Length: 175
Image (cartoon, rainbow, N blue to C red):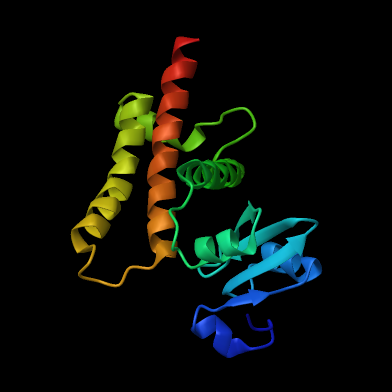
């Protein structure tokens, strides 16, 4: 294991032991990129910040932690789902502050629906097409182009969020 000051370690995806203070700093700032771990009591906490997302997971042993960081063991599917849903929630709340109003959560969708004389779900579906197309393009190019995990995460998050908004529209129209 190498110290955090060694920038070559980040390039080589080696795992660096860091202090709890540095761990929290990386989680907050998403820098520097790389693979890290720290100890907290009898737990080892792995931190994968190779994409700038700062994924963290607790382990009972250093071996489990390093295997997870080196992707030698399967990622916990529940953890992936939890992380994705947290990201979706954060993006939706931020986008609502940007696009919605306090009185009207679906403001832009309502405007689009009125302008086009279509239903709210139809307006959403029209806006979702570009996100669906992006996901299809990524799938088509998988293995042929070097697509970063960051790009995959952005496109998948956008698509999931449109489906979550669709569900919210359908449910709130029935209430």
